[in-house]
Each structure stands twice: as structure tokens, then as C-alpha cells.
Length: 269
View (spheres, rainbow, N blue to C red):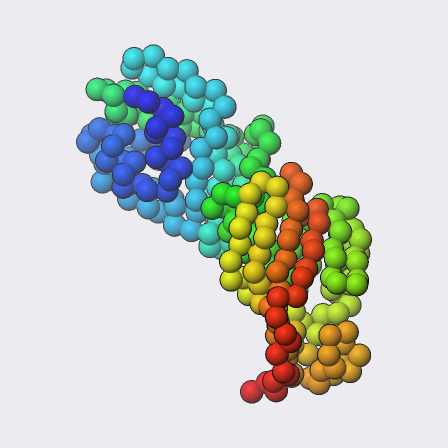
């Protein structure tokens, strides 16, 4: 059995293909008190375990002979839905945790016939986790979580995506540091809330380029709002291009450029 191919199939998220190609019909799966047998039961378990969760294997040590594979794995669990009752720790959409697994696979005719798994507590003894932002599907989903947290004024949550020395360039205005950005928006959001709609992003491990519409809505009269005076309930909207430089999976620099005219204010319904 080619374990690298197994890992690739597992990480693809196609559980049906994984079970079909890599497990015997009578496979036995054991993890603590959990015991199941057969492909159908294993697939039902995986469907349940991966409901709102992307599970990614990062193999640290792999030992193999003709009949066995032993793997020390750092398993990343990325939440695609809020999972307050997740097995290892509560996760909100966009959050992730890493769990150390020790897995012994018994092989027959090149497939897994018996699998035993043991785990440590979440985030204990694991290697450096996958960076929060970057090019992978999970990292792109995390960027969407960042924009949702910003739009919802969840200051602690969205600022967790910044380096401490992050710089944000908003035209002529420059905000310095994580605390500087949070203080600016905490003050602004008392009268005007900003929400982001992401149209498209291009991402790699060093940066993200995003095409975004941003809407400003007055929750109180804001006659001195920097973009345009707004009365309570009014909103304006414009298109922007935003370039995010990343460092170790966090945002280190933000530069915003206008990509369209400001649309006229509209009264709330």
C-alpha cells in the first residue's frame, strides 16, 4: 500500500473514494471504546465525523512493512460550520485545532483490514500547525471567516488574523499595529458599521489579493464620517481591491485601493 496516496485521498475529502479504494470489505476500526466493522459502517462514521469538519493528515513519522503501517500524525481539524460540540474542543466556523494521533494499520492484499487509533488532547505535543491564511482550501475558508468576523464587529476574533505589527493603508490614512486597527474600527463602528462582501480572491502563502464590495451603514447620525455624511439608517457602497501581505499565515500589511465610485446613499427600509 502506498501510504502517500492514502494520505492524498484522505485529505481530498472524498470519503467514499477513500473507503472504496483503501479498505477491505470487512475492515475493523477501533478508537478507544469506538468499534465498527465493514465499509458501510466506516463510511457512515466518516460522514458523521466530517459533517462541518475538514480533516487533514500531516504525517510526522511513518513506519511500514508488508503487513503493517504505523504513523504518528498531526491531524488538523478545520471547521466549515460552527461545531460547539466537536469531539476534541468547541470550534466556530473558520477555526481549527490540531490533535496528535497514533495510528496502526493492519494490511491485507494492499488494503487496510484493521485500523487502531489513539489520540492526545487537542493542541498537545503537535508540530507547528498549518498557517492560518494561505492558498489551501481551508486557508481560503479562514479568510472568509476573517471578513465575516470583521463585518460582525468581532474585534478579538478578526484581529487574531493580524501580526502584532500589522500596517493598514486606507488611502491617506495609515493604521499601525493590531491595537491601532482595533481602536480605529471600535471607534468608527459606534456610529458606522462596515460589512465586506468578497467577490474573488487569489491567494498563495505570501499574500492575498481580494476583490471586495464594502458597505458602510450608519447606526447613528454620522455627519462627519470621512467618506460621506450619513444619517442613521443610510448606507453607501463601493468596490475596492485589497492586497494583504502574509507572514507566517497572518496578515502583516493591508493596502486598499478604490475600484469604483461610491454609490449614492440609500435609506434603510
